[in-house]
Length: 241
Image 1 (cartoon, rainbow, N blue to C red):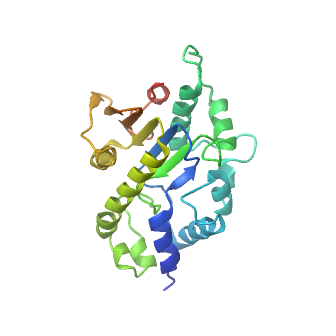
Image 2 (cartoon, rainbow, N blue to C red):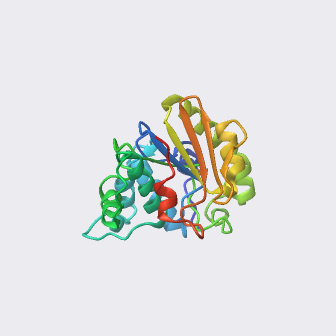
Image 3 (spheres, rainbow, N blue to C red):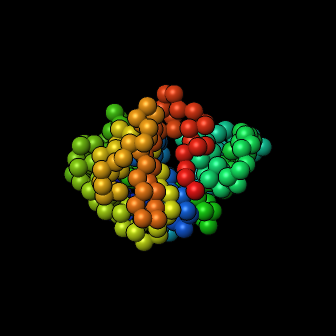
């Protein structure tokens, strides 16, 4: 049976956090990336991370070109990735003049995805609580690809990795002090509250939105961009200047 490199896989799990620029004013943090449908895809991702010097964050476009997904960024009309598209709308709205109420055109979102999202020195930042990509939370392939005890079930993996990754993210937030942190996926509210370090303050129960302000930082917990009923306007009005 073909298996993944234990060392590279372990390094990735304990180091890789996501994409972009940790100096960004806004950080978006999700639960985990999609993908990882087969061992070939996972090997590509590990090799790409190694080629990009195994840093905590890497350039989103460079990484995806290395895993043969450059079509997300190249060409005249690259297809919008559903999660990224709404995060981009939140970022654009945050950066616009507060008096500018003009509509954010889809072409602007597509251009942002192609040229700026998750790039090095881009003032955008996309992170994940858990490091390994998976097609869904109901699927677990890694027990077929690795003999590492931690990967023999999703339960073992999350039990061991979540506390470690929470601490990593807490330290990173203290180190870089982003003014706004957006956690998306309300089913993981317990983890987001643990990162923030206090109970969530639910501002809008109908739309499942929490806003916690701690000194000079604002922490948001909101529905996943691809959840049923989530609209563009919800993300365009998400961030507070």
